[in-house]
Image (tube, rainbow, N blue to C red; front, side, top):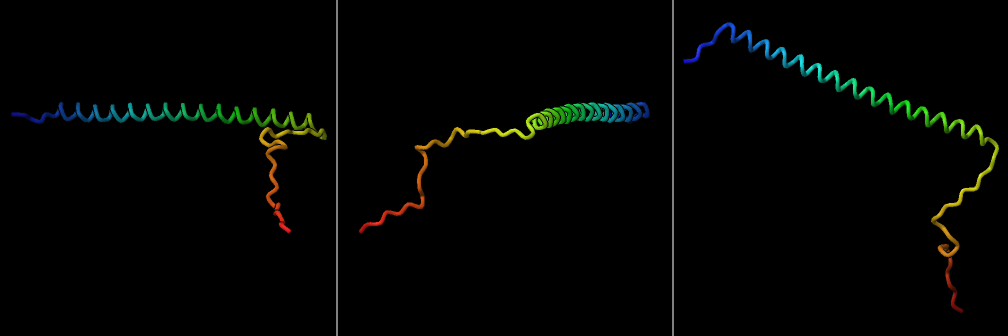
Length: 86
């Protein structure tokens, strides 16, 4: 025969409260870790933006030619060409 005791009830309540405290603590730790990672990501973006601004300020007024590697003179096709037969 199983009896319910007052001490067993108190122990069960304390275990449930302890589990809630541990889960809350783990949640706060995970949130802090996520915030730190987000802060590092934002700092990296800020550094990239800063270097890009410095590069554009350094090259202000200069002209550069960028060659795209995909198109050569052999790949050009005249799509509007229509052959006329007399």
